[in-house]
Image (cartoon, rainbow, N blue to C red; front, side):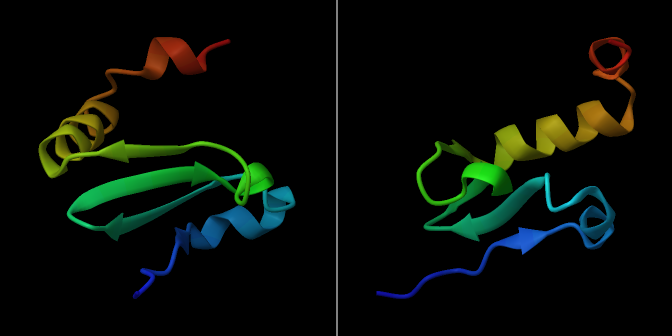
Length: 68
């Protein structure tokens, strides 16, 4: 069994490691919270779903949610 390594943003070091990690595994994109990496949930997205999310963030689609 091979394991795809998790990737953490390089800018996450200054916040005490509180961030998310992402990896491509078994044809899916997986995301997890580093604070609960071993026992917390892992979100799984298809490539199309992930691309839609990335495009939404680039286009400011989620900015109202960040204002809180």
